[in-house]
Image 1 (cartoon, rainbow, N blue to C red):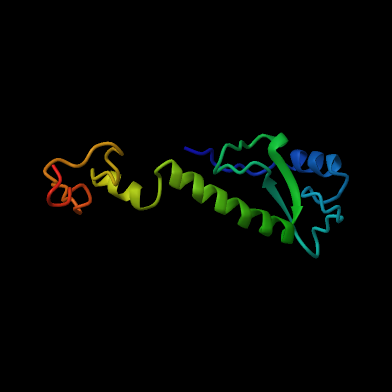
Image 2 (tube, rainbow, N blue to C red):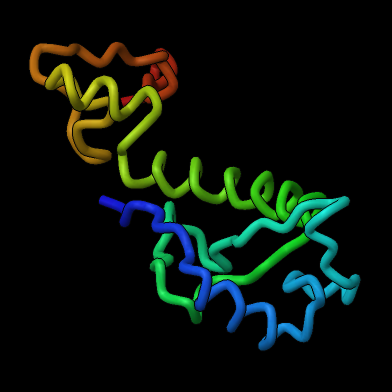
Length: 126
């Protein structure tokens, strides 16, 4: 389960702004302008993966930079959730107690495997 998002306090916001010297935390180097563009505090390592609400994990980003970072993070978060069997077809089947893949080395009980005839020897050979 992921941690719930907590808002920054005014003091934490000021400290982050001073640490970043008033520039965007994504690395583009553009000066933050809260009045015209908007400033968003982002978790550098997303909460949906392994991130925390610590101030060391937070950055202040311009709104366009934050949107592009969030879109990139969502792909990673969805993939991680799918691999952890939280979403997707296999997760739905697990909830219904029907695993998609039982075992790679075993066939389900009661299923007959029909040969395609490649193992047959030609007539006359013994």
